[in-house]
Length: 248
Length: 248
Image (cartoon, rainbow over all chains, first blue to last red; front, side):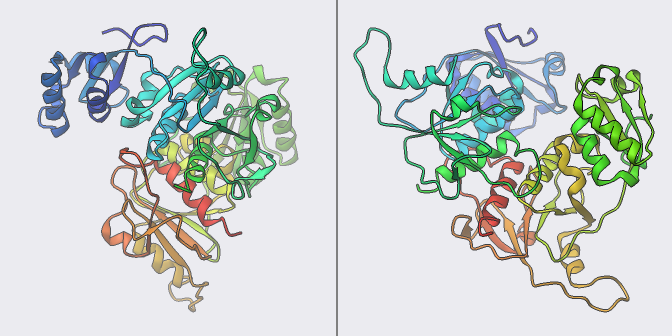
C-alpha cells in the first residue's frame, strides 16, 4: 500500500460503512480490502467478507496497513480501488461547484445530495480532488452513488449540456434552469420557484461566484439575519437542495 | 503560552478574523494577542493592533508561539482569553444540542445560528467542549456572539426555563415550543408551522435523540430521498434554522 496521491491511479475507502458501499456500488474497481484484527466480531466486517467472497476480491487482515492509513482509531476496514470515471446524467438535477477547495465540504455536499435525491455533480476547476480519501470519508457511503465530471469553466459545463460530443449528432437534453447562489441575489430563495431539471451553482468558500459566472443563471440568495460573513458552503448547498427539491 | 486543556482557564482564537471578533465582543476577557511577523501588512492585523491599543491589551509579535499553536499555515494572529460564562436568554429562540460530539459540527452550528439570528444554544452533556479552539475556528467570528449554557439532561433544560433560580420568585418566560428532530417524526418539516419562541432540539451525530427525549417536544423530520444513513448534523440544524425562521 502506498500513500494517496492526487496523480496516482488508486484511492481508499476508510472505515467499515464506506467500504461496504464501495463493494456494493463499484465492486469492479476494488483491488483489495484490508481488515484490522480488532474488527473480527464487527457485523459490518462480516458483511465485507461476504461481499469480497461474492465478487472474488482479495480480503486480508493487515493491522499495520490499517494503522498507517487510517485517520481515526477503530478503523476496521480499508478498501483499495482504482479511480474510475463517471458521466453525469444530463437529464437530471445537478449541483455545480465552482472552485470548491475544502475536501470535507465536498464530501459533506455529496452526502447531502444523495439525501435529497440529487446524484450528479459538476465540478469546475480549480477544485479539491474528488478522490482524496478525506472526501470519501466525509461523504460517508454516499460517495459511490454520485456521478461527477470535471470542467475547466462554468461556460464549458453549460456548453457540454447542449452537445453529446464532438462529431456526434446534436442530442439536446431537456431545457435546464441554472440557479446561481450569491450573497446579494435578485431573488430570495424563499420566493424562488425552482424548475426541474435544475443546476444549483455555488462558488468557492472564500470568494463565492464571480459576477460573470453569477450572470449565467438566475441569481438567488439565502438571506442572513446576523452579521456573519456568510454561511458555510456545505450548509448553503444543503439549504439550496432542501428548497429546490421541496416541490417533489 | 500553554497547550489548550478542557479543564484549564484559558482558550485561543486562531486567525485574524476570529481574533477581531474576540476583541470586539469580549475585550474584557482577552489576556494578550500574539501576532506573526508575516502579517505585518495585513489590514486585519492593523485593526487588531488598534483594538488592542483601545482596550489596553498587550499585543506582541512572537512567530514561534504562532507556529506552535496554529493548525493552519498563514495564521497571523492568536487571541488568548479567559474562558467566560454566559446566560442564555429565556425569551429568545434556542438551539438545543443533546450529546453532540464533533467540535467542527458545534462551531459550524454556531456560525449558522448567527446567520439566522438565533443567538442562544443549550448544550446537553455529554458534549464537545465549547471552548476548544477547534470549535472557535469552525464558528469563524460567530463564536463570541452566541450565549450558551450546559445542562445535564434535556429535562433539566426544560425545568430551567420555568424558574429563574432556586429560592427566587417564579419568573415564567413566554410559553415555548420544543421541536425535536428525529428521522421518522410525526410531522414533515415542510408542513410544520413553527411558533416562536422555539427550541430546536437535535440529538447526537451517531444516535440522534432517544425516544424519551423526542417525546418532550413536537417531533419533526427532514425527509430524505436517498438511502444515506442521515444528513450530517450541522446540515440538519441548518435546514431546521432556515425553516423555523422562515416566517420572520
